[in-house]
Image (cartoon, rainbow, N blue to C red):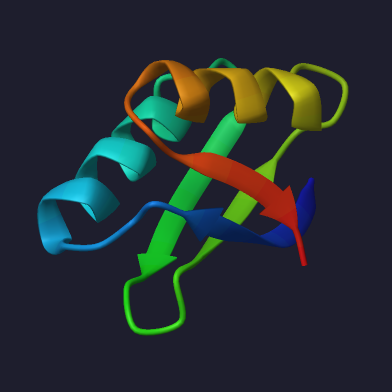
Length: 71
């Protein structure tokens, strides 16, 4: 398992945070996704053999006007 912290642009409120967390948690291979609204970051624990950073970025982009980038 890997853990990475991503910056999330467009995450402005608790609803946004919940949408991004949900989009990530729905992916096979993502064990956990925990957002920090104050820092606009997302800590993600995932299995790199099952899901890629690009797949996570696509899932986040598809759930709203959000962009996931590595910090």
